[in-house]
Length: 243
Ligand code: ATP
Image (cartoon, rainbow, N blue to C red; front, side):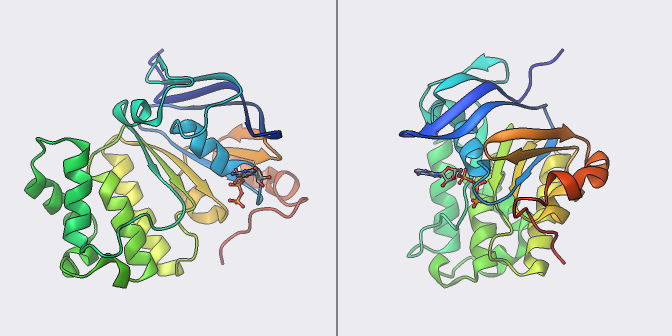
């Protein structure tokens, strides 16, 4: 069997005395898209942090492409090809779109062909091309999210951990962001998509993992979740379906 792009095995994680994850096992295969869904506070962002090395687990292991990275610093995860697009905007407000992108591309690999990377970023997100000279701080929320994504997507990560991409975005912008994610997946990048709103996440997902109070309660194909969603997702406040 080929090694998983990412494998969490019996992972517990905590913030000081507060335990946030309980015995979580989760696998994302190369090129696979997995949606991680659950109510507020279920532990989705905590899994995203563990998967990119930002929060070391208190027990269990994390393998990236078959290599044990448990307890290693986040840069080892980045080097192994894990990119984390966190909640929020994560761009430099006082730099232009082009400067933000250049900084990210040069930091990732000093010898990269930055002009080619820039072209690819503007191909994926034409809106950013139109606004290449504009300060990032003056972009709309959706454009800032696209800029944050372009910074990591152009580098063709093995696995993108995308945390709440739809947060605060208009439906039309969310649709655009997911369209690009679909393209990126089609070129072989695996996705771990953390979402409150189910529709977009389920549309792109090969597999869905449901988290409730720090535990995995469902792991299977999206069409099976359809029968279970009322019982699995809704009782404790729940992710909502975007309308
Ligand atoms: P949301 O959809 O609201 O972002 P989530 O499913 O991503 O929720 P997490 O952010 O992973 O949930 O939080 C899981 C639990 O860990 C919550 O009870 C939260 O209060 C707690 N938690 C998260 N971050 C911290 C922190 N830095 N310190 C202490 N507790 C935290």
